Image (cartoon, rainbow, N blue to C red; front, top):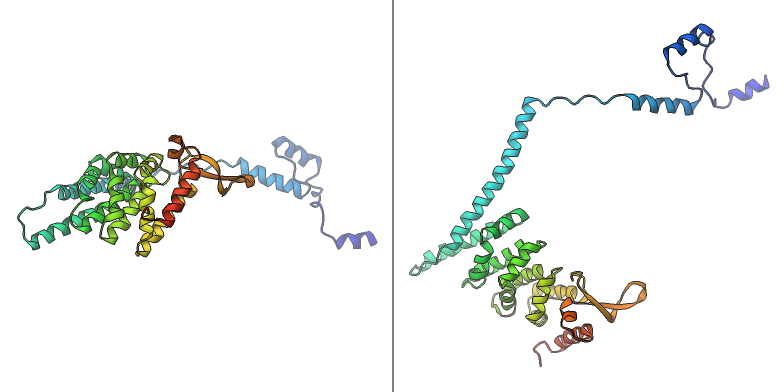
Length: 313
């Protein structure tokens, strides 16, 4: 009796045995003859039976696509392709507007309307070229040749800064477009705008385009160094335009410390600590390619001199 009382106060560790009727010889023979597995005797066996039963259930056959769903899918795909074609047509229309010559003997009202139409075309292109596929199509349509050859040096400032913005939008993170823009000589013109343009908006947008062409782009960085881009950046930091000062400082830090340099960099002893406590500073590939001994030290000295004497004195 004591054993029964103590056993009733604990949870059973096994399932109750099958009834006598189920364990009889006749029943057992029918179960064995049917090929069914024996019933589980504990919780582990019950879990195993549930897993086995679940894995043996066949996957339901795929339902045939209804006509309504098939029609919806076809319309969605057609709309996507139609939207892409429409955007290409929009870019072609914008390029037709930008390719028109300026009216030679137009009055002020006509010139203002013409400039407004061109500015609208540049803004629409900037929105469309946020899509990388559209940016590639824009370059295939010779749009970049038009921007670099004509609009970076346009008379109205509104056209210049919109052209610089569009160049940066197309170029960022797309190596093929960056190489095309660099081959057209855009970096020299953009540095000139950053250094000398009287309009602050033009200078800010030119800096944006320069950043898109030189960060993590070795060919752009080499051109930047050959064109004395560091001096231009340092002079931009001396200006009173807060946005220009901040963006110039950020780009200068990125280039000098190497965070935006491509893999082709040399590392020589410097002030920046490397892995394991070793002192190492990345140097642009141009310094190493020129064979300058201690290229990193020379680059840092030039940068320090520019900080102290931004006018070269």
